[in-house]
Length: 118
Image 1 (tube, one colour):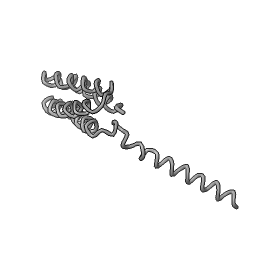
Image 2: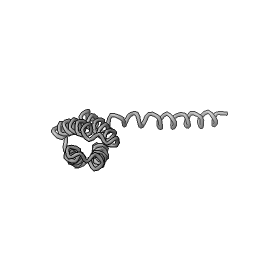
Image 3: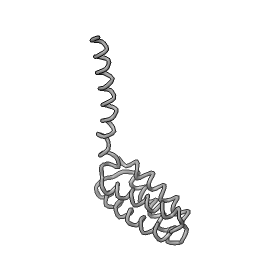
Image 4: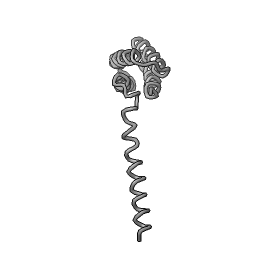
């Protein structure tokens, strides 16, 4: 009887740890940096609009994402942040030329890199 209580307690403890661990790590995502998180959010909006062939709306969101990414860059150095900024600049350039498809690919690349910022 005592052994089954110990095993049950151990299982509950392990399960609680599995649930709590991702919650503890959540603020660390995107470096815990609000500007990186905002950049990702707007870059994803740019992707959504680009996939609908709305180059003008893509550019608008990519520009906001770029502003946030540059603010984050003032607070930290990270090669993924640099690559994310590069991708956003490319997305804006192609979006302004009306190339929504190519701009969307660059915005996706930017999100990929910005998501890796730690």
